Image (cartoon, rainbow, N blue to C red; front, side, top):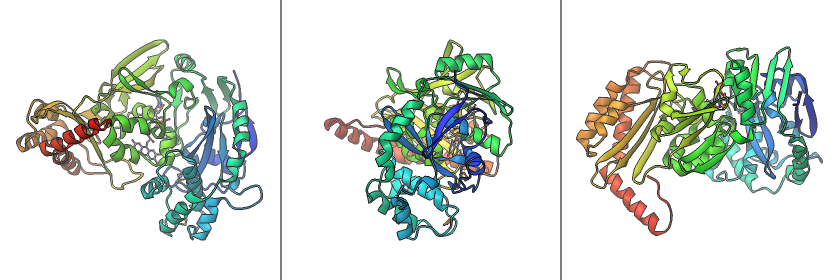
Length: 496
Ligand SMILES: Cc1cc2nc3c(=O)[nH]c(=O)nc-3n(C[C@H](O)[C@H](O)[C@H](O)COP(=O)(O)OP(=O)(O)OC[C@H]3O[C@@H](n4cnc5c(N)ncnc54)[C@H](O)[C@@H]3O)c2cc1C
Ligand code: FES
Ligand code: FES
């Protein structure tokens, strides 16, 4: 058992034996470390002015992630290195290639957004597998807002910086990897101070035990929801259990039952695996969950456990037939994801129980899965409505096993059972579509709120069915069958 948290800020080692479990990294950096280059803009994860890099040793390699410091708790950094804008100059005083490119391409007009942009760009250069095309760059910068200059010079700077050679962090990587390796002691952390108690269990068994002992404690995975309760809602959390680094909850695995995603797996980490099993929703939905910074911290299971009626994950995962794994002590149970959501703010989770992971079955052959997020803004916006559809189409156009789920249409993410009944066993024709459109108005009585009116939500929900018909109706299905045949012939795997 350890009673402090240990991490680096730049090259400086810190061991903190007393810190409030909900002290944000942004406040700590600025107020206690005097590192005021990290700015506070929105203080709610939206603007990216507070972007810092969190570097972790994963296996033998360093992984760099941009996160919003305003919604990260310091306690979550145990075992990591944090880099701020102050670390970007090389030891010889020269600018980082990203900073140099921002200067050369006139990407900066103010000191407010620029540090955050630079940090996202540095992370983007380091991110393995990040598309380095225009879309990849837009994606990388979607979590950073500039209110004045426009993005074109910043994108130009990024394009240029992508081509630049190694930076001083590359030269120091082995040294930092050795230092982070030395921090790995496999210990459980328990700290109690005047501002509350922090537990960081080393294993899932440890988490199960701690939660049985303290069922009122608040689990924090990525803190992208909980962070807002603290900063905006001023909520007191007397006992925080941080689970983000529990190795056995960070597992992504192909199992006999499908794709398994552990409770501490982030959206960014799950993305490639999800794209394999749910190809089109990745394009439409998973890429639009928050921003890179939010997806780097927020977890798939946190999105579920939060129980929000407008979370983007649950409708897609329900349509895909996902199963949720819950654990209390040594007792485990598995339930269909839709059954987890009981009512607004109420989930089927007993005191002391936690989400251990989720399994998404591989889609049956000829299954079409589609999901569309409708929000006021393309990036960084919460859904007004999200419709997710899965159905199997026989060669003669008969629909079987329809699973349709919506977010934003009820107090919980919910299946559209009447609409499913209107489709099951029918031929996919315009008459069937009309019946399904009718049924969907019976399935839901949505609310009006600041995101959309009830009328808008009902209209869009029916229109998403029409879009499904247009994109996946009999004619589209024939096209997809020939794609399937072509891919099988070339040894590739075709989805939907
Ligand atoms: C700027 C911004 C943009 C966002 N955009 C989107 C968006 O586009 N779409 C969207 O759906 N969401 C969005 N979110 C919300 C959030 O990012 C997601 O819901 C995220 O997946 C939450 O995961 P987390 O790990 O951060 O959860 P946390 O904040 O750590 O936890 C959320 C809740 O789940 C509980 N919990 C977490 N893990 C477990 C577990 N294993 N067992 C039991 N309980 C658990 C916590 O106690 C808490 O009640 C956004 C948030 C921000 C700040
Ligand atoms: S201050 Fe805006 S994202 Fe943190
Ligand atoms: S240059 Fe900072 S807000 Fe635009």
